Length: 137
Image (cartoon, rainbow, N blue to C red):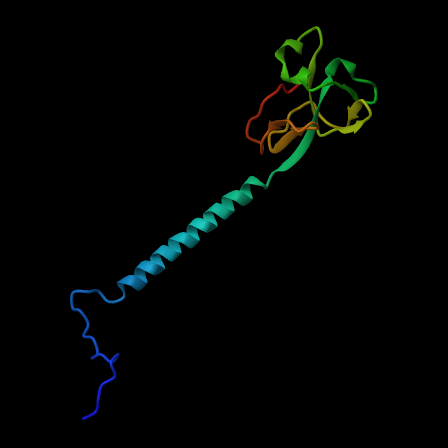
């Protein structure tokens, strides 16, 4: 008589109470959820970087010359409410070209659809949604 290999086992009969393919469908479902979650997160992260960013300078709004340029002053003047009013109006000047202590070719009107950062790195407005500081004009 032929001897059976010690590892040889008779074929298993399927368990009638166990659903066929349940592990496979669970793996597919979990994989699909994971892929969708990663796609949504990646899309949201990409949307955060889809805005333009411009620079801003704090200016003395009373110092406008005929060429349209303004005198650039320290940022603290635009961050502090005590400097606004009739004795020195200071405000942010957005997107201008700076030449020495003057800036021109920008605007005192705050754009709403961009990120705004001062030349010193202070975030004035992130991604077009709110911000801080005065509009200056």
